[in-house]
Length: 276
Image (cartoon, rainbow, N blue to C red; front, side):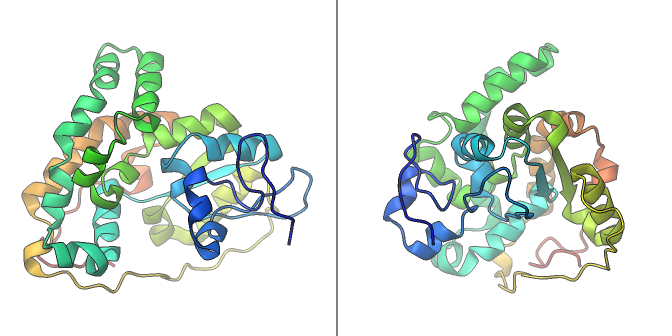
């Protein structure tokens, strides 16, 4: 194990984390992306959403060590991701607090609207660069991360699904040509094809054969009917994410249909299960 020390950014060698994690357990800190050098001959994979959503620093710290790194975002349709996250956190928080999904998400939208008002106005005026800068400043700034807003968006159900500023930040730091994305829906539809596309983008061996994907880490928590989502809530969240998703599609040079993010007519919105 490398000797623990602090670099010029105040981070602890071993993971690209924020200072708040120093006082947490070793297991929590070790779950973050490992420290590495640009010339190390291995492929590093990370499944930690906090690197993209917590602050700007993890992307910058990683780029200092590995300026030629490729970044692949694994995304899921935002509302479906939020509901899956709700189910994941359901027993330890939402069930005991008697909070339903609609209340946990819709109640924060007006506050987020205030945070991103400048960005939306710039987008409406076709001032994309100014809108991106304003949105990223809001996303990673203090105004949209204050304690009161975080209480209105428990566990960041809405915040973590707002992908566009996470992707734009990594593109700015690592280079647009080194950042791509694959969706859970693409992997479900054609895992070998999605794997080949990502491998080609990052320059991995083209002869590698990808097999069919298997479902892993599926959330098994069952949600009480009164806490499940509603049709109206689903549609309102879909509409709220839409302008941000459109900018995301443009940044990634993709479309809603390519990602498999079309609106779904779920058979029952009081059923806690997402379609398999």
